[in-house]
Structure formats: C-alpha cells, structure tokens
Image (tube, rainbow, N blue to C red):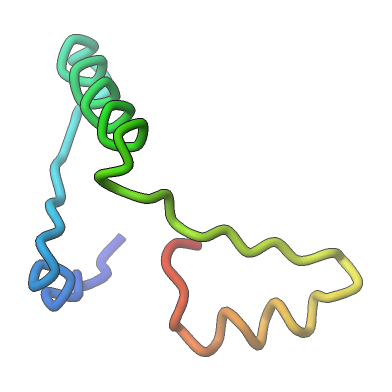
Length: 71
C-alpha cells in the first residue's frame, strides 16, 4: 500500500487491471483470459525462486537487490 508503480513496465506492453472480488463474473472472465494466454504460450509465467530455510541470508540478499518481481 502506498507504493508507486514503475511506469516503465508499460513500455513492454504490460496491462494492469483492477478486479473486485464481489464481481464473480468479471473475475471468472479475467481468469479465463489469463488461462488461455498461458495455455497458448502468448504469455509466460513469472520465474519462481524459492529458498530453503538454511538459505535465509541469501534470500534477504536477493530481495534487497530489488531486481525481483513480486514479494
């Protein structure tokens, strides 16, 4: 909350949309569109990096570089 959105993300054709949980029809439609894009290969899932508990120091270092996407 209160974070600024990096506008350079839009230069690569990304789209950000807001959906409200109480609008189930809109959510179903959006999830269907995303699933179709993933299935067709038009978009790729974000890379996932997981750390073991023993790698906690490496995980904090990785996050502190702020070159990741997500939390």
